[in-house]
Image (cartoon, rainbow, N blue to C red; front, side, top):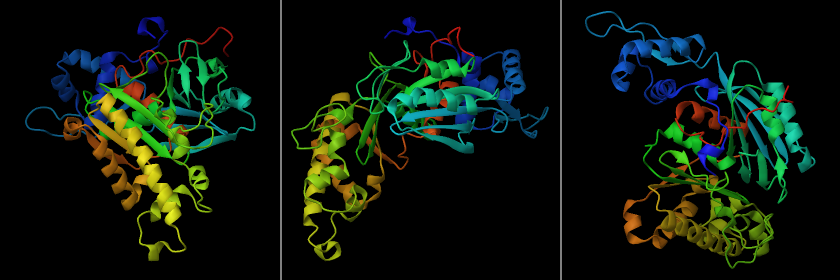
Length: 399
């Protein structure tokens, strides 16, 4: 999908220079007008005009003046977390969730939840929830969904939320009215969060993988922006298929990685009780500590680690990112984590092993409204993040 074929709007109607100011304040902290002028190489009068507009809109604020050497005291500026906010709206199997995030990424109030008894109710429920939480103080709305999305035509093409059916999500955009909407796969939303809080270098290519019990997703960042391909989605590593006996995935096949990394997989391997997290926490313990013949569980976990490391290593060998980021509760368990990292590294090409960095991140909920809100924040602080992803213009029927 080319950028030219997509209708776009600037989130919060900010131009590139204003976004650069926000990016500097986000990444550096407090800066004065003079420091912004020096860092950006822009005429002081132009900086003053941009700062004045951002101040008037409640996006940034002035702090107490500071005396720095001779001359007039300088007034530091910072992002204002109190006046404006962004909204996160997450659609996932069984629920829709919405929340407000301050411009510093903190929750404002409590998230709103709605259960979904029927997948067909997802879009109407999300539209109603957005109308309930939307205010004039919202700068942008981040909408995250599971699966593969066509943002140009506002269609959810395939998802664990609705299966293989194609569903229009334009009513959500209509409900936002004039507030800009940034649409993303839930893994792109998680990648936006990671990118902003870790201040990652824009020229690094990052493969971020989220691993949960029965859920497996990935996002690829190239030059600090998500790789979207012909449709907007994550890299579907969860649907890499191996010659392994598993339950049938929602995609209609068996052997998918996300069906292997699951409690259900342990059941099929004869493990009668306990969850994946529980057995991973005890993996590698001595028989005395494990007790009751839990060698069956360790054997099943070892098979799982073999498949998981093969899938991840193949992805790294093919993509060749600067970083592999693993976001999972499973990596909190020392023996499980060490075994996984050893197995991944043993399968990497030697020259790639010398260069790739493997990081662990304990943020694991890629389906929350809080995660979706970081799509909106990334559109404010990272120029070009939202290219070809923003919502189509509201229809005339929008209210």
